Length: 205
Image (tube, rainbow, N blue to C red; front, top):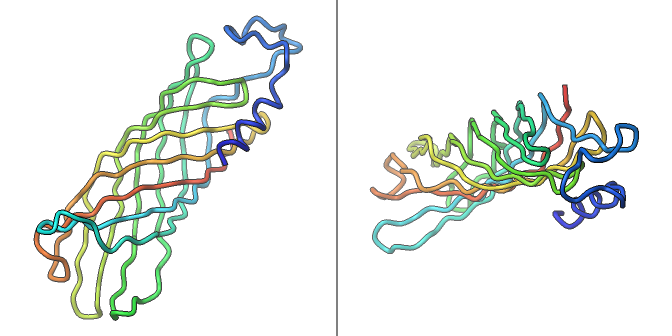
């Protein structure tokens, strides 16, 4: 996916584009770096793992799908560099019941992130991500339940390619460090962490 996006961005960039300063091109020929406010959709793949306190190992790894709405704003400085803020809210799709008779799912997902990066070309932006993630995890067997829903620091990175002055498409990856489970269905001290991979489509407004 990254290779396809980079290939698209390079193909769109003109061969005579100054590598050091995008602004040296004439206004008529120079590609526009698209920034500003945007709305978007993010399909988040949330791969969580339980960390067992006694065995010092991981177990019960599950992939969850979380459709997410995104709103953000960003701008450039010094011709190449980018700073932005983004918020998102989503709700996890329910998984089927496990063979053990238990059900595990993600509920509400809320995130707030800062972006810092640079433009590989006017069409392609590479950036780092740091912020907070609050994804509700629940584990139940019909009568009892365990949950983990606290805030956690999240870090990662992404690549966004602008297809036109209105639309962009990208990928993003993040890591969410461990937070604690509570409830009788999880051993005391058990924690959950997650890797997230998202495919994003945005509309500049």
